[in-house]
Length: 116
Image 1 (cartoon, one colour):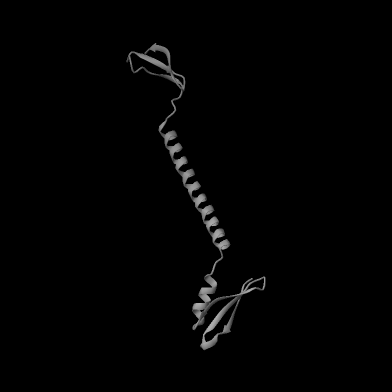
Image 2 (cartoon, one colour):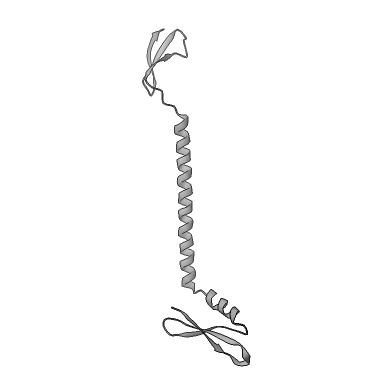
């Protein structure tokens, strides 16, 4: 846990000193007003903190991109399945000769024909 303490500085200004969990101290800022010193002390981030924040943002971005790709894939596969209407097996009018009917086996047209 980081503890922020105020110490008076010469000339009436106040210095903000940060004491971390290892009990080492460092002067974060020195200012005449305390509010600016608090923002400076609270906003200071170590390189490890930046690394963790960047890694978290990268994971969130990867999840968002993955969800978008899954949605796009689902929409594309759904649109091709919706346009391909399966034909049930049966006799249908032959498009080449109106006097004949042709057998469709549910997947392909066969060579079996009959007159109407």
